[in-house]
Length: 326
Image (cartoon, rainbow, N blue to C red):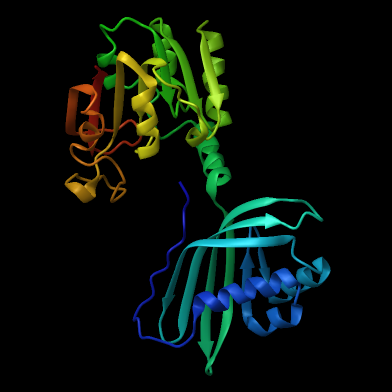
């Protein structure tokens, strides 16, 4: 999931300054290596922050030394502009592609430009960039699993209850993480495949499997590109793995007749659920999973409960769902 920085400014009086177009123009000048054009845009106290801070003089010196940017094409999305009489902020995501001369690099990042008007002239005061997209999210999960705190390490209780009397077969654990659920299933005789894009999580799961002499197959990939197959699995789990509708559609087809789907995640507060102290959570709406699976599955369990989630320590409104394919 990509993160974008939002800054809310106080009064919203309209101004003629087009913050989005002006911000694009700065990046275009940067790509051309136009030092004079960039210098004309920067405030005296300007700071550029892309991993480390650089003041106005340092930024211009780096641009002179580089001659030209290595970005050949930049495609913007998720753009927002916030303006007051004397302040303006631009935030947006950009997919960037290298020029091929010094590397055909691919970048996905979030930009923020903060502008300020003094004596009738708009100047750029702050320029930030941070990695976004698949690489950034994968790095975030690697860091979470490396620190190994903030989440439940025991297998999910709903899953344990759901498979207690089920004959083991082929199981797929979607967004396996460190493998707490995949390893539990393997210990119960299931032939388990865990898919995740975190190398840290997969390494941990494999080490645990080796230590306990358990068979565990793992696939490190973006789950959106994973081949779920058709009528391949006796059990598919989505335990705190988000609520991606495209994944759910593939999972429906991937489960064998008689096979099970088990999911637990946060309840969507926008559709009647409660939130924990983190605020509004993007989860499943009441009855959403039943609507998706009800045409070809027997719904065994579809509950909204107030409980402590596996990924937090405060109470939250949770959806617990179990269904069996007809």
